[in-house]
Picture 1 (cartoon, rainbow, N blue to C red):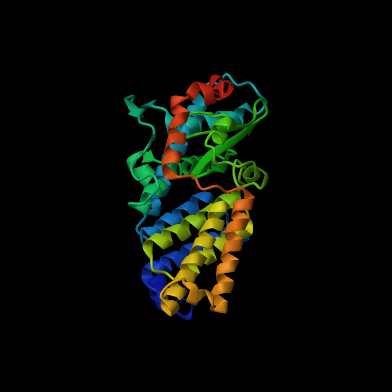
Picture 2 (picture 1 turned 30 degrees about the horizontal axis):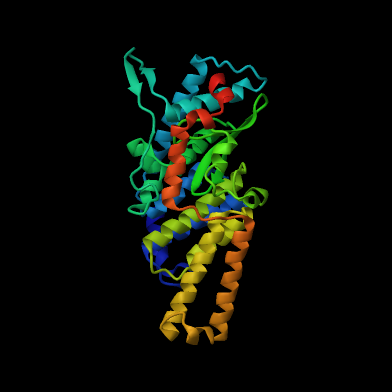
Length: 356
């Protein structure tokens, strides 16, 4: 009944005519924003669900989604009970959670059911097909990962973060160019990285080896920073905006800018939000110039409004560059990602690998 009422309300939402599909996005925006504003319970899992459900036009079964998460959480808890780690720090119980989560994502596990039968649990693998979601944005989703056991550098760390929250373990998303990974801290090792795409604990030099992490980007906290819970949820608002852009390519930019502005309130240096904001403004400016002057030509630049918009846009791109952002070509990203496997001995954190 609730969904029917919401769909009918979509006709007059915000005093404008919007489609039911667009209304799913408006619903998702309000629910995620209230998590950031503190007016409802903050949940990364629920924020991810809202993003994916909106794109799938409210066809993502929340019961199935949550049940799959629960099964994986139960498996992780079972591993904690039956395994012993070499690690002997005072925070061993917390580290046991990290190790169990890592196994759930990356390891094959023999599972014995209530009747004594052994089943082989198959871990998740990296899906090199459409890793950017160019063909289908849903390839970026946790729900797709759960259904197919194949994911990418977006869905795999997102699932890990969701499971960590379920186990009340401290796991932090972190960013690199075109990439998301996990950071942990323990008293013996300090901060260390967990890479789900290859099942390795890489040292920071692997991240720097990409060649696209400028020192200014680290200083200004664009990359390699352990994100807090609200910052992680802010990522979801930008994911929501990107999905909306894919679903409605001729949109006027209003919803996208609303999402990125809300995200930037809680994560001011989120570079993907800054870039999406600039690109959306650019599309708006180009569309206005095309409608009025057949393009962003000399005549259009004589228009004071368009000229001012163009100069302001240039300034935004300059500011993003000065923060340390450098665009990483997709083919370079793939080479960098594969380098972790090909040069494992060079980039793996040997101490962490031996402790688990």
